[in-house]
Length: 261
Image (cartoon, rainbow, N blue to C red; front, top):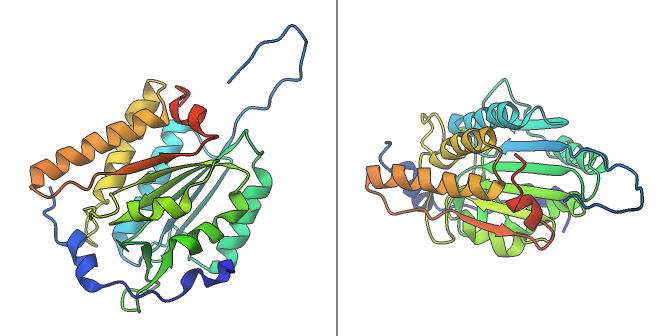
């Protein structure tokens, strides 16, 4: 399936979207033989607010700022959104080209590409809405996997902020990919009202990344702290827990647990 089909219309049920919009707001080895020094690991950041509500663009903007402050300026940052003049307007040809460019630059097994996607969601789909009054389309897990295929040989951390985003994990598993989702396969996430400052998951992720990076922790610790913060907000609001999920590819366990942030 061509990546150009990423905007294939998959209508998202309004009742499902409403679920998240109406919630209360509350390895280094040694050897006797001299070897060439390994290059320092670099990070690339690719983020997209997929739905034309300002909250999702704020997710992109705040996560990009937080990531840079916590971990340093990425080698390349690609940030897309439909409503903010501070973000590039999404265009599938440009987005594909930039993703290929990142894949070309990133050294396999050394550099890490962080992809953050934020939107509404339904089981097995992320919503896409290019204009506030436009039609709702979507991206399936298979289409997303095809879109990300240029990165197949690169170390990846894929962050999916959307209701029911855990439903995408099975199709997106890869040996070189860590996946973090805002919710379990059967649960909504919260805070995606258009006037929210951030979705609850990205707000918590920003805080967790700041805290953990300050003490030189790991992505595993970032996710655990994010889940803890989300759960606290949900308890305060009295909503059903979203149960954020994660998946760690076979080649990514060192990235997941290494205290190098």
